[in-house]
Length: 208
Image (tube, rainbow, N blue to C red):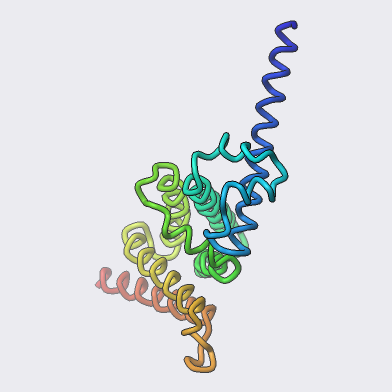
């Protein structure tokens, strides 16, 4: 076998391994959405992906490893979406920030098991921490566009915890519009309006 043939074979095996891993992650994501973490077993994932029984073990050490990968993918996907929002030339800083907060809440609405997994993955996992930090960086950049760099972290923390609270209350059914006369979108808008007003007042006070 020539060198070029050997290299081609290596590339083919690498591509095949990447395709198998992608199929496993996709299958795991589907199972998670359908039945939560209990439904995600390496055997069930392999069956859903249509690979051999031992294939999942070649890519993931155990179930927790696979679930962590799903959380990492979710954090990175959110970071991509928030980053795209920030580069929207037609949106105001307030509109971009509203979109970023609602993007996070929407994961809880559409994929509640994945949302819960994101916030239950150990923060000391290096890759998961890096993915979460990437989202936080993109989010803080949008916050800074509205309130300035100096106040971005404290307002960012307020917005992230508020978004988490809204998502959790919606999931539990304790944020019914019939009861509170307001929905998640309106709450986010009220919060951003209050933050915008507070930032302006702080600027005015500092200029006195």
